[in-house]
Length: 236
Image (tube, rainbow, N blue to C red):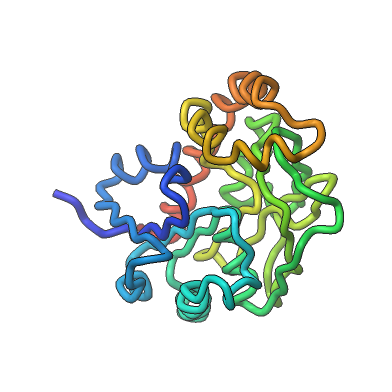
């Protein structure tokens, strides 16, 4: 019998929980997907656990995508209450802005593909240490970036964009990168993001696929270990 409901806020159908889903199910979580654009997100405000996934829009585009206002309200509420919340890519940007940071188009262009992160000393004493130790490269897929919100602890940086992973206390963890990525899931991303790939100099599906099969397995293992530890630490 499942113990709790994990509310997952999804922006596009092909960006899901990836390697995080088996961990949650193993630990007895019932996963409730909400579509950000069409569903009422009210149930996510007080969910035992909430995960905000990625997507190809900007946090600053609420005039075009009004549902972002409710997401920002949700993230603000959860971070202020200290409710366990995890954000990936767009989800991390939503958390950053909701907590007092600013999101904007990155000056270094799009960061798409597999590359190394550098980790802060604080990362070595957090669940993120599993990535630092066992994942040589992680997946990036974004063009926006953000300023760290007040009281955030920076855990990881890339060469192009320094704000890749941050924490707010023990209960909020945010990733600009994609720790959940699995090689098999990315096959759908290549289709869904075909226009972006074709319009970004230096990118091609063949190389993205090759890199995924080289680096994704180590990322999957370490990301699952990280999630297990984080859930243990937030007593879930």
